[in-house]
Image (cartoon, rainbow, N blue to C red):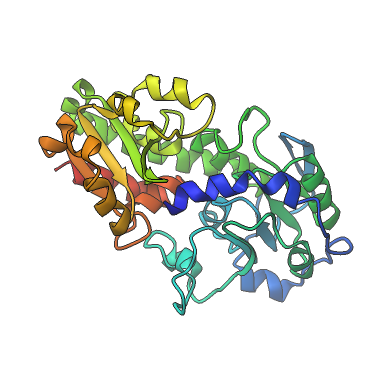
Length: 342
């Protein structure tokens, strides 16, 4: 369950980010570099962005941006800026090139032939400070990330750094809309960011209006983790998508998750996913294992064929699009999610 592992492995970031830092502040990028990264220079600068670790002033349009958040690169790409460094969120299949994270259907054209430097792999204890410093960034985005204050301070020694939203109580819990506008503001694109967010909201509303029958059904998104059914909460981006297209969520899962974005169900609590529609986000091997799990197979929705099996990183990668929840992935995810219901 790769996407779930992303956030779970991120729990170790607080310790790992305290070790080893690259040297010195960033040099100013050249005009040639700006053209290479695809950056634009418009925007209301200077701009000050308040975030969980204080406030950051960005004096001019950034040209060399490093993404430390797991999905921040896609928000950045949405504004025509190609990050020079990013997190390798989904492990690349051995021997496969280019990196799968630059080849999703919703980002492939945006990246083109550009190949960003990987500054952290999924499962690493923290980003590679020396790599980040060597990239000479003029802005570091660490929004969909679990960095702590000490890590933020280290990153800020390299370049101006924007952390997660100020109101976010738990890492990875902010609404995708807030993350998108937060990053847009740092790039001097706040108005454009709000327009893109509204466009996606309009798409969600259109899906809901086209399927009024969804409103009478309770639904949940789940995966298979540690040989157990692992449902996502209504506040997780996957849960928000399910309710966004019109289904009712189940807050009972939120209660036992106790602030986390998911929970692993014990056998006696499988009743929590005994709902009208189930969306399974998992690649084929995990889907097969889940189908063989008798407690899952005996659920009413499963027996009645009311399950949408969505491949995560394989094939159309609908699960990855839902999990990433970005300005680029969401339009694709909404279309595919609605089609999956049949």
